[in-house]
Length: 402
Image (tube, rainbow, N blue to C red):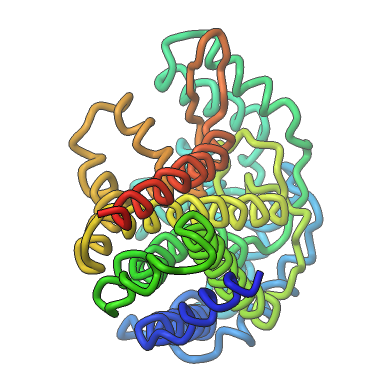
């Protein structure tokens, strides 16, 4: 245990490690606060910029949406009618406070496209002029849209039925509340942002665990270590994995703290269908957030294993850093040029897939089983990291024999 603590302290004492962690903290906290207070929820000015009043607008939006507790035909009609009345009294009303993007984009224009009138001044803004009484058959229309979508995505009826069965577990009528904040968190706030910053921090710190010893001139001393090569390598691996867990904990703590202060946790039990109407997963917002954090955690551990292996295999920290980042960034860059079947398997690499797969209908066909993609996206990054660890020990010990 003392050897582990020595290696762990050595890792944290590195100037590059401290710089990377400080940069991650500054970037994560700064961008998240700026997004909440201005970019995502600040009042938009005439020139397209945003005021710094997101906190106030979030509270107003939550209070406004609290008028309706469930998503029914009658409540949708009332939401549109209320919006039209407010707009008639105050043409400068900020539609974001009334969840305009959800009403217009997710509901009316998507489920009732036939109400669009080209003779209106703004034909695509249907909630400005539609007769609310025409907005009926909410769940029947959603089911028709879902079936049409699945028919276009899957040729196998059994694949389509897999997701229709999943959708049958979604509670209807759905609960309703202000979901724009959850959309910002789950859309790319956790998964997308984590995929951008965490690999860089981990690679900068962990690729020096083995490869950095030669640069520091420690090879000769370590060969004569009383703990043995395998014991020293094990301590280094445990130190690197512990660092990865700590970095994830710091990142998650910052994200959750910003969410708690600006958004709170109101609406945790809302269905994720309020973010994407054709989602079939029977999940609420809190379950989705837990999944996205779990995805990042598994990817962090998986990428840590890759970074440690590259550090043990390659002679220098720069080469190990580039190799580790290419393993996760290369497939992301090339994915769009590859066949879908190849993309599906590359997505199993740490940070290559997406935590947002809970909103999608992606399947893996293994043997006779149909497996929804979020499961493998949790398991395989972690499995890859575990497989890398013994090879890292063997590679480093073999180098010490030379």
